[in-house]
Image (cartoon, rainbow, N blue to C red; front, side, top):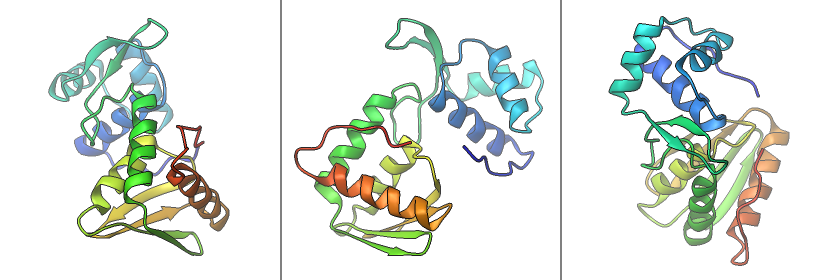
Length: 172
């Protein structure tokens, strides 16, 4: 996965922490510190400990029974709950996705009025490979993909999820 350039701000560091915790089982602060360093984010153990405390991080047992760090994600779920994020995306695609339109590496999604933020947030929470980010308006979500090929794959995956018989599938 390609990672964005991360500024040296507290907000950016905390965003990287959320992204790491959503993507893998992190069992210690030292492991998290190494993962941050691999992304170019150098931090001390004291700063990391303070971040985790202020972010309301907790250790929870994942589906394999291992205690891992988790923090509340942007959509209210916890970062370790990948299956729950997938289920939310399926539900919102089925309930809210009205139309899609490709424009190069950009994917435009139409929703009912007032629903774009829900769908955009669900896409962000799943952290699909090939998506640089989303921007949600009132009834439109702009999905910025890394390449036109990624945009085609994301469009196909979202349309498949919108099928009423769909179940959560791997989106990487």
